[in-house]
Length: 571
Ligand code: DON
Image (cartoon, rainbow, N blue to C red):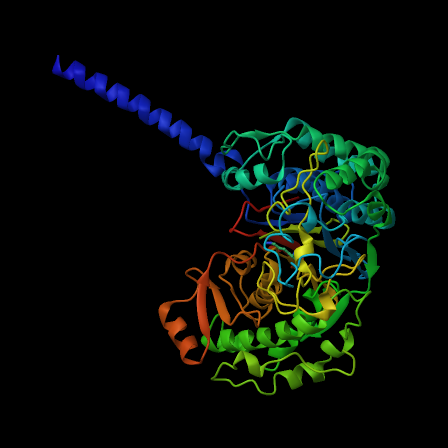
């Protein structure tokens, strides 16, 4: 009798155990997508923030598309399967290297609406009104992503079939895709603010709590993507969608009108290119600060024996931090949209200037912030990155964003897509920090039609004239320092490709005073040594999510950051 009871208890507990096991399988990330963080490919490689987007990009490459075709398909796919940052309601930057070595940069950054003004975020006393530039309809810049993709398509597509590139995104919006554990949590965490900003029902403010593995369907977004598929640029900037966006704005005291949309134009710009030892680095010009700051950082450290000091040796950290302080001080004063403000690009990346800036670098002591001001001249948390190399040898590096996670949180009624809160990247008032703690001035003040200053740093590195690295990352102000560190991890600290992405990071941006490091990145004795030198050292949550492809030994080594659901794919 006793044994029978024991068996019964055992059976019940086994069934419960089995059910718990099944449940844990369901919420186990790996049972939803098996994430590939590093792999070597013979022909073509892709690294994006979401496995579904990586698979779509690879599908296009296998259909004979080039890196541009795959990038367009990935941008639209990410707008569906990675809505926290992937977008059609935001903007971005692209660096493209053709197989023949020709370089191009495309600026599809958002612009300030015609009715915007320098004081639009200030109250009567001249103080910045909290949340106005980050949440809701006034935070939104004119989206550039669809125009950018259409421009890239017209100039460089190999497939020459726009519909083929947009359709995969429509399919995943229509039929849905499975949420990862991180995505479900993030959507639940933001539910209240979605409910506050949006009165109409949509998948983001739904009262249900999401769980990993739930299928996320976006019917309205599928409809908008269908307009884009069928009408190209006009499907977004004119007609039904333009009306919907303008109505959304009118209803909620926003200032974007149909003319703003009609007038939006992405721009091909000159790439910022500079040498570092036997490498040439190509990155984004203004309105991004990325290329200029990366050039300053690399040139600042070049004369020092950082390779023999080693990765995150106190001397390396100190040197890199001091270079970062100087570069970010320049950013605050001199950088903005070059179409509106005379950014002294050539002066800022002139090696003599950079050497001069580092002249007061003290190898054993942190310089105090006030002693570092911007140089003088005669004149004056979510984004996503993806890297693609195709089998023809072309490479694309794209960073695209809504700015904060899910941008302004505004979902356009009936159209299903999220709008950015990029206006916060302008300097709302001289010296008042934005959501990344960055300060700015005249160069980055709000003006109608102007692009807000960015830190996005899509980058391509050549070694002895040949394609070597394709990389970039999200992370707001930390983007530039993450790209800087990842390049050094590969070319100076000679880390394997996966490790170079995984390695812990740190960051300094002149103001605030903190030298930030990722939780657990610096051991206590390292913190002590840095403090002794005069650094104010603080730990913080993770920094960046780098997507890297390295072309070496005739192969493509692709790495996706372990900090997110990032995933490599290829063939
Ligand atoms: O353009 C910029 O610099 C910012 N809007 C980027 C935002 C970002 O990276 C947020 N990601 N975590």
